[in-house]
Image (cartoon, rainbow, N blue to C red):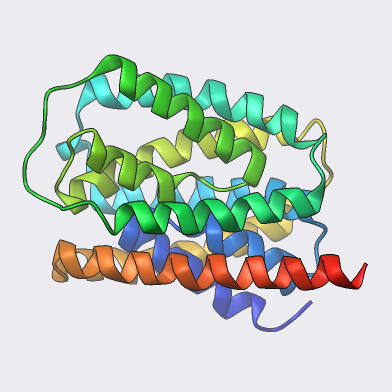
Length: 249
């Protein structure tokens, strides 16, 4: 187990507090490459880390002041359902396929996010798009072990929450719900160390303090650009690393 695991845990919290996303994207590679965990074990543990850290961040940010109840309920119910389905499906998916899907999805979202313009508007609630999107993101959460924030933030912007900090607020609540549902489902199928997950979560929770501070200070456009750059780096690295691993088999 690499000593880089512990500072990386702090970075997980900073990223999640700042962007309302990205915790799972960093946690899964960190657990695979720095903690030497099998892919499925890393995915299962990641969900618990992301759920705990997201809960910490949303309490710090007092996000309940900016929430749209109908959007949150719709995303929450469909997301939890999708997360349970995805967690059950993930057991039957090859690990290399999971990693490739992980990397390709990150790059796809990066491309889409670069074409979205932020604003301060909030559009009329749309039930069907919100339900379909919530279910899809929930399935991705269960299959790939991410909280889904890197999909939730762009999706919320698409559905009309154009103000970045408000999109982050909704994202943190939904990540907590989705990741917890997926994590509970994985307890029945994958063995992993809950004490280690708790230690990583505590260190990451400290990082959310800095992330929350930066969120209040930096403009949304700069955050969106930084978020996109982070996605490109992580997605590109994982795609390259997985390709090399497959080539060596």
